[in-house]
Image (cartoon, rainbow, N blue to C red; front, side, top):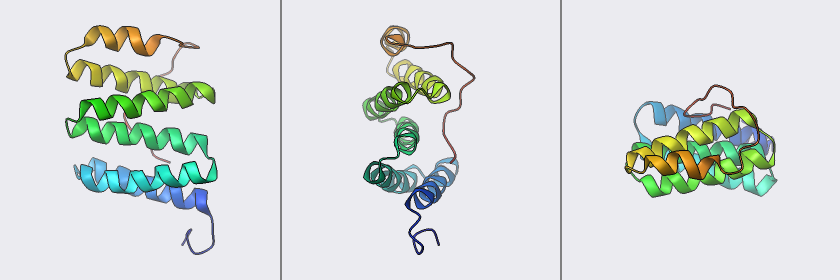
Length: 132
């Protein structure tokens, strides 16, 4: 319906939520399909918060698939945008997820050192995936 009436941000939110649903069902490849659409749409309309959320959710999906470097890359992009737009919750989520990814590849020191470089504030509680 959002697509029919031209509400691109709402359409992106709906696609994100479909991706999240597939993620929680363990259908990571389907989740990635929806989340990549969400990311493209967010970039197309200049929605930085939507872009950051999509990047974080893609990182979580790739982490669940064991594709750790891809997960790290997506979570790092998420962190960069979260800091740019002063999204402290997004920053906390990114840092947590980067830590999980680095821990998964047995690089716990990277989980501590690299992501904290440039931290801007005390961080709130974390969530592994963002529902729009």
